[in-house]
Structures are given as C-alpha cells and as structure tokens.
Image (cartoon, rainbow, N blue to C red; front, side, top):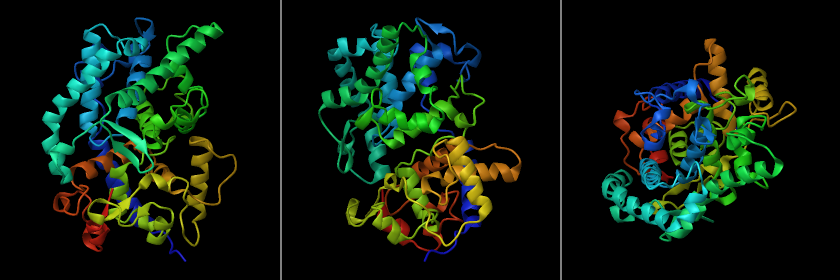
Length: 414
C-alpha cells in the first residue's frame, strides 16, 4: 500500500520551481516579428491599451492569438528555440512578399509554392546555426537535426516530407481561422476577433484547451497534442494575458488550465522524486508512463503525457487538501460538478500553486511559473542524458536523483 505523500518535500520543491519560472520566463519572441512589432513597446511589452485596435480587419488581440496557436502546434518538435525562429522568420519573409497569412490565411494556401520554399530555406539556415549546439546538449549527431515531424504510434517522429509537415502543422490551424470567418459570414455575424470569440465562449481555459483538440467542428485533432493545447492556454492566459471577456472569471485565471506536460517536465519531476511521491514506480510502469528499455541506449523511457487521468496512490488525504482540490476542479478548471474523492496527478501543480498562494495570502505564482521553472531546469541543467549539469542545478539540494538514487538520472530518459 502507498505511503502518505510527503507534502513538505513537494511544497519545498514546488516553491523553488515557481521562483525559477517567475524569474526565467519562456515566451516566443513575437515582439521581434516585423509585421507585429508595432503591437509592442520598445521594451518588448504588449501595448495593452491598444490590443483592440484594428490591424486591417482584425484586432491585434486576434492576430496575436492566431500566431500563438500556430506557434504551439509547431512547438511540439525537438528544439523549442529552432521552432520559434522558424515561425518568426517564415512569417516575416512571407509578409514582406505580401502574403499576410495571419490576416488572410488563404494566402498561405494560394501561395503554397512560396510557402514551402520559405520553410525549406529557413529550416536549412536555422539548422546551420542550431544543429551543433542542439547535438551537444542531447549527445547526438548534428545531422539528425530536423524540425519537421509527424504523429505516429510512438509519438512524434521526424519526417522528410515538407508538404506533409507544412499542410498538417501550419495548414490545419490556419484553416481553423478561415472556417471561423466563413461560419460567421454564413450566420451574418461580423466580428473583428472570431478566434478570440470562439476561445472565450468556453467556461474555462481548461475546457477551451481541450476543445482546441477535440471539438467536432473546430478541433485540430492529430495536428495538436494535449501538451500543445495547454501550452496555448498558458500563453493566452498567463504569458501574453490576452483574455478579454472572461477576465474576472475564476475559470480564466492563472490556475485554470493544466500544466503543459512535456519531456522537460517529465524528466525533472521524475528525477527529483516529485512524481514518485504521488505513485510508485510500478504504478507508472503499469500506466505506461515508464516504458522499460525503449529509450536511447536502452534506457527506460518516460512518456509523461500518459500520466493524464491517473490518480494519486496513497492511504488517505488530508481533508483540507482534498477540499482545496475540489475547489480547483469545480470552480477554476470547471471540469467537475461534484466534489472528487481522489486527486488526478496532472492537477497537482494547480493545487500546489493555489495552496502556496493561500498560505502566503497572495496568489503571486501561476501554473505558467511552474512550467517555466521546469523548462529552465530541463534545458539548462537536467539534460536528457545520463550526465546532466547537476552540480550547478538550483534544485540539486532537493533532488533525490542527485542525492539518493542516481539511477533515476542514469537509467531514465525522455
């Protein structure tokens, strides 16, 4: 039977992760995308008092939301910095040629030859800049650097077919914007922000994130993963703060969406011992979160996305913690009507951020801070190989993989 969760350890580690994320913010360089530079101040901050100003027929808020959705769809690839540079540079080059793909998505498809040529050209340029560093960080060959990918039964896999990548990854979200515009036109609805209207018609950021993938008419399906859906919620709500009509609604606050669990999150949370406080190693193997022997070098592979829907395995809950969790899933995430009797692991960050805010008397942290803290650790110290930079890691004093069970680092990869 599972032991009682060591909440003191989890709270202490979480506080450190939140502080790191609050200090080292990860955000796409939208302020450096030439067509949208006038949306930002000289210091790179959004001009919020001008967000509803029209840029051609759409508001700036709408155009930023569109750009961010394409960004998160592409950001499922192996190199976050490379992906962001690819989107930025291709967007700039296409706009210079008069192809305003976020204002008029049809330009993307009508000029598909130019679109594909730009993507190929910029990919080669970025590969020349990023491949060696990426290979060194990941202990692999620079020749394997590739930002083109597709979905398979094994998750995301690299591909060579640029047409497949272009239409599926770029084209699907751009088609969503076109469909929303056409549906509005058929209904006789005039809107300068059809995508924003669609997003904010949902009761919470979490429900919105799920509908981005699953909605029967507007869902992106296999073009987007759960991680990317929640990354969009993070960007829209907490990083760029684009929420308009729901701004005073608990369902659209900084704890109203799940953390976008990715390889960095899975690696750091597993190696530090965070996840092993919530369930046993056998539980994770049974859930296929830990897949033995199929990772690089025949190490055990951590597929953290499989953790969704899995519940904490422990003897009992403190009633206060369970009550706070019920408040989160009912009033913030808005995915439950009745008080739950168990806690799903993917919602633990929401619970922790909420509880730390309650204890401190101020909700100064967000789910985005937790995610950015994990990105900071995962990309700067906790590399995806057996010899990460543990000595300089800011959470090394708490990390059980570093201090007690080195096999958590040596034998597991994402």
